[in-house]
Image (cartoon, rainbow, N blue to C red; front, side):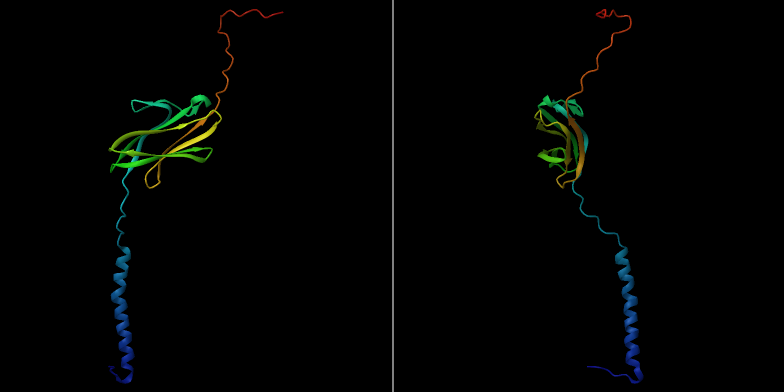
Length: 171
């Protein structure tokens, strides 16, 4: 069913309705774009309060922490003290030797405050640069430590103290 208007009134009416529609819809589109987006669900937070690379762990504390270890060390430990917003969760310790992943250890985090550690056997020939990272379940790095396994330099020769007797030079 179609109504016919005389003298081109139909075209003017269509144009007026189109303009009215645009004027009515544009503010709605603009306000929809200006609305702040709902924040996405944030994964439960996992924060490393303290971490250390060490030669051992005793009573849930790192033993002999350091950045350089002798090739004879045998085993290195990565200790992390954590705060978790929503336990239980987990953390992963990822070990790298010369920038290549060599071990990945998943560890449970059962309470809001938690201490945990992993260890890596170190063979005497595995000298050079090492790194270990702590990762959330989503894969975000929350802490990392670098260390080296190398032969310590020889100790400098000792010099006699002033006033100390020195043996005579052979002639």
